[in-house]
Length: 77
Image 1 (tube, one colour):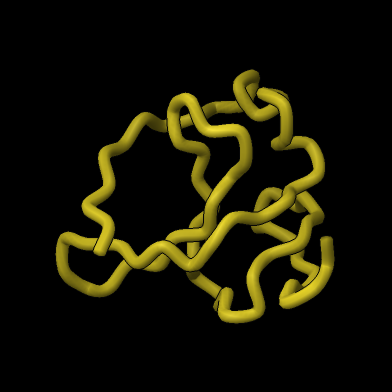
Image 2 (spheres, rainbow, N blue to C red):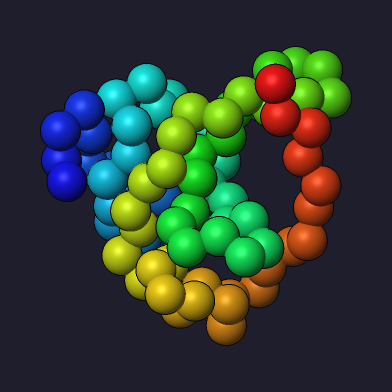
């Protein structure tokens, strides 16, 4: 589970494991129909780069659906 992962804390104070390449400012999102959250990086234009899947305690198995979520479309390269 933790191979090629690093420990993180989100701005919302959630704890989790993210891919090694994750950087401050990356976002964690949940895709409709997805089973895990993902880390995305805005590339400065209208696109995002998919960094990888992650584990965020409190976001798994639909737990985040009770939060103030924002629906957004992403162009992923």
